[in-house]
Image (cartoon, rainbow, N blue to C red):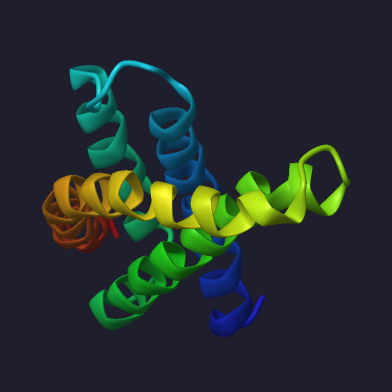
Length: 128
């Protein structure tokens, strides 16, 4: 498997995880991220980074996963409008209302992911 394919697959998997976290924050009435999620975010970053060969690839994959996760969540929250369940007049309200919680989750988890990227590469170098 080429490095680009591996990066895209890892980025997509990582994005699905981040998207689930963001969507969970949007859908649940309680505000904030449960503490166990921070551990899961770190472990996911550690695993994803260890699947890649270089730190540069890990950082590019991390950034791509953030973009993919935002796209996934935007597609999920606009799905009822696309299916005709909600009127299209609600689209701006839904999108604008979801930007702040998504940005908050990304800001809170970004340092943990960055630390996981570095440590995943360190563990990979030590084990191989």
